[in-house]
Length: 114
Length: 115
Image (tube, rainbow over all chains, first blue to last red; front, side, top):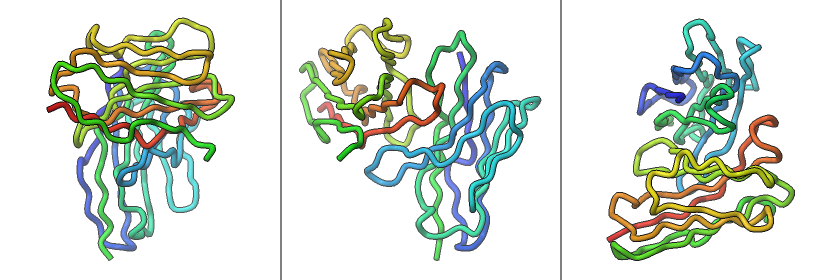
């Protein structure tokens, strides 16, 4: 089945700097790659997603890039703010054989220092 | 509210007891997922319901775990003869019609502690 690896597991940045989180996936048939943000005591919430027919997508201070050949995708947060502190999860939806479910990475705990 | 509701929010039980966790999805959402989040770990898929189709149970870790979804709405995850390794946060999510439309809406989870 699909396997998703996420790095780094923790990331500390100064307010205003950029943060980058990287994920790799194993199933070349995967076609949907969302990113979720989980604040303390809450459930994960979708912040951005990208489909396999697109290489890059941007929404204000966040952007996601996808390299299908290398089977990796990344989340970029620019001009970080303290409210960006949270755990971020990447995920991938595998091909038909994998079923209609997401496989998540292990998460990245991001701390933005004021 | 209109979000996914889970109960109980916290459950402490003794090893060997059975527990039931409940999920109320967003009204009108046909897809419902259960995931497990162990301390400091990612989300592990357990089971997926879509409308009246047979559920995808491929993520259930053992036969002590089962889930049902009555009337296409509320779902209950049951863990029999709980073990300490079952301690985790159990997250439920619903979606308008599965991943074809993208977003999963998660509840806040049920934290299970097995002593």
